[in-house]
Image (cartoon, rainbow, N blue to C red):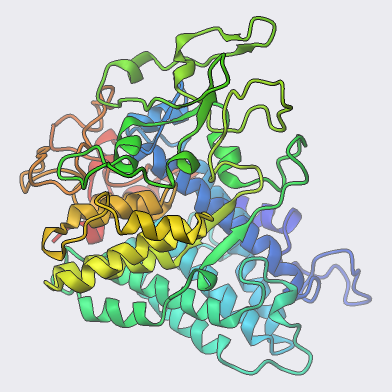
Length: 543
């Protein structure tokens, strides 16, 4: 892997390279001083976001937010919890080849002009990427990943990587608090995520610290006060969230270079699940009433016009039924007959179709807020902060404070999605939201967080920490489980999950490593090439 990463990083991306001659730098060629830190940062953020959000899409398939039309491919396999070495590849490749190898060159360029803010951001991105993907894969190269002389880097366990990540976040905070040198470019020149707002980056770092600390909820060393202390310095308002605004030239352009990652990743084959729809509509065991409709419903679930022009909500794919074994099937629309060729059109595509409808065209899909071409990527938000607070406070037996945080999380997510404030407050004061602190459960909190973290890599972390909807024996238990209704899919990959107590706990090792670095892979985990490796718990998932 290392050799491939090193060569690609030199030939394609903005990384440092050896000078051919020590005379006259070519300003059009990458070397130790070209490009500058502010030129290096935008592609680093973009490539990190690709790795992060692409891992999030995969997590959404595993976490039963997304189903897929029938075809034996990577996405269909993910819905049966089979993350094969091929489906594992892209987040890994995008992170290592496109992003991680460019961090040190950015830092080196920034050091020359005392651009401390760029250094701080680079360290936070490094911590964010490695911390998130270590939770995703369970283990990955860290110490040796960018050593050009090491062709087969060793794998480090996620527990070791988290130690490194926490230190990086502290360093990043310190760098962002420094005064930049007189020749340093303003952070705003290269920052396409927080637009030069150092306070947002510092708050992001504290939020990530809280996130990683909260992952330890099963461990004896779990420290809820440390989580709350970090959260106190994390984003407190939506404006302090780290939100990536994707920019698409128009609704009809065919160039995907600027479009939102979830627009690209969900494509024409993804569908919403019945579980996701049930959570949004309060149709699960122990849910509040559904007397008032969640104002996010039509933003999260696509609709389709019938022949009379009435918009009908998509049906959700029941992952426990026989349908996912060979359906739903894809469908096409015939404008001349104003009809679809299959009844499975009730499972509506996620992309807005037509992209720019005229008054006479039938709406085949309204699309969703996350899958608009020019959507926002909610990379780290105030909503997540509030739901973490709610969880910790609930564990501390502070129901009143937990209830306030639970509502604040919902309010923040709705605000980020652009819901009218009056509508938000009316909903939050309705019976469709828990009003009695003594009636609040961990399930209520985590299901709302499940909605707010749609298509997020962190969603699957929460499911694992909470043991899905199982009891202490690992069996599905509607009464005791947190994620009500979350069951094993009917077409589960039995080789990896032979027992009813087996659940998806880690992603497969990518094919690059299996094919070219297998000795180091098996050195780190002798079971890594076995199907049941997928149900082995990662380090924080064990007591």
